[in-house]
Amino acid sequence: PAAIEKPAPAPPPARRTGSQSSRAVARTPRAGGSSGGGLSAAERARIRRETPGLVANLRLFWAEANSKVRAGVMAGGGVVVLGLFALMYWLVLGGDDKVQKGEEPVRLSNQPINDSFGLGDDVTWNRPDMKVFEWEFVAATRAVVILHYQAQGISKDEVVVSVNGVDVGKVPPDTMASQERSLELMIPPQQLRKGEPNRIIFDNTRNPPGEDTWRIWNVWVERALLPEQLSTQQLVQTANESFKKGRKNFDTPDIGARNRYEAWKSFRESWLMLEAHPDPKPDLYFEAQEAMKRAQMELDRTCSKLLLEVEGYYNQGHFKQAASTLDHMREYFPEYDQPCATRAENKRAEYGL
View 1 (cartoon, rainbow, N blue to C red):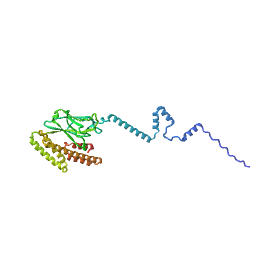
View 2 (view 1 turned 90 degrees about the vertical axis):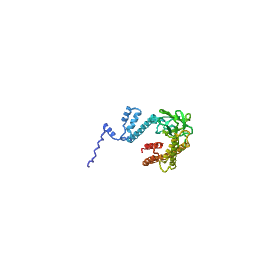
View 3 (view 1 turned 135 degrees about the horizontal axis):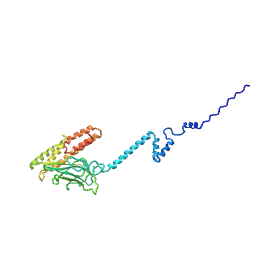
View 4 (view 1 turned 60 degrees about the horizontal axis):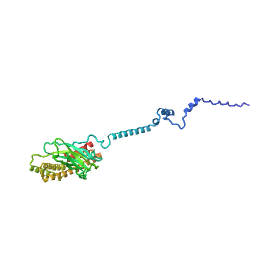
């Protein structure tokens, strides 16, 4: 019989050398290992050797963080830096009196000082006890000196006004219109010193020991020259004419925008004319004073109404209407002898109109 052919035995499998085995293992990724971007154990060890402690942990965190994490860390760092700068600014320039700019106003002139003085959160300069001003009186002829100001947070007999150490009047107590009213006080000429500084003081008689809030602002001084070389009869006649003109304008305030102003000005001329009248003063002197106060109250109300209208337009973004209203205010207050004219210009500058 034919011989049965047996298959040749398969050769034994080739045995891998050590180097080949290690290379194969190196090519095989480890199960559960990190994929790409991570630091090797050797790199981690090197970083820990170079910078031990917390710094090493921070370096490892930064090296293994992705771009989003790094961006978040940088943004947070920026916020912290800005916060530190803000804190330093507050510590250096902040506080009650440190935020004020420039020097505290002391000298009075014919221009209102917008800063406020007194005690309270809304005052510019903290003066709980008193505020002292200086003003130099220069006049070649007879003149009346009038102190103008606004005041709020004051009760009866609380604040006394003195000139060169002599009391000349008291600040009237608050009313419902304290924020908008204009106040004035005539300074007796015998209390003024010509050619040298005069001390004008607003003294709060309750502070100390009290801590009552109060404030004054828009303080200025007017020097009104008195008529000369007029007889007593001429003074009375001229004052009568001015008073009649003022009453006519006051009784027709809505016919023209200037009527309220012209009424106040005519009453004022009548009063000043009789200020030059020798004592005893005629009754018209006191009537003119009262009429002038009533006209001033009307002007103050008109001023507040128009400024509120300007503020409303500005807050709504209607800048042209706000500027137009400020222009219209010039018709109501054509001269700067009324404080509202200055207030309107300040508002125009504040709003950039």
